Length: 253
Image 1 (cartoon, rainbow, N blue to C red):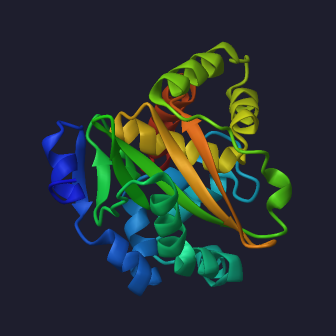
Image 2: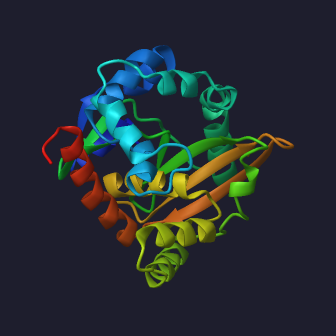
């Protein structure tokens, strides 16, 4: 990229505004402050709760958390988990390996962004790179040996055209229940549903046709990369449900 990634995002006419310019630095240096910062909206990691595919957090718990003026005990516990700490520490290494493997320059935007068309949605990016004049998000994950059972073989897509074909396949897979649709699509991509929705929110923010999730596995320190095509069905459901949940959080319904 000829300019910094924040400038790229500003100049592309994306419907994003910076909420906090140094959010990524805050996440690394002050977990308490970052946890409170997450109260300003529904972040990408909240999407799985909103859409009913999170294994650990229920919707009423998320609503209470967003309403709280203090960091909850649950938030403190999550921040202290060994796997969470490892993931935070290893993120630059995972992204650097991805960049070298695919021959791209991955940049980490510092701000937390708000989607101006859907103001209740916010997003942070682990990394972003430019491909075919598109800004593509890449999410970095550390996979513990206990979580390995939720992952499948990586979806191997090598070109934009392949990604478009996969996107059409996903659209055909729609089922009556959005939760079932998400589970099937996530399984097809090879990743857990709660990460699938996270990437979908990032794709929505960047208006990107696809994104990547790159991972380092605890068992054998194996690296796996997964491609996630844009899923308009999941994105529509996310926007609809998020707006309703935000009204609940604000006591408007």
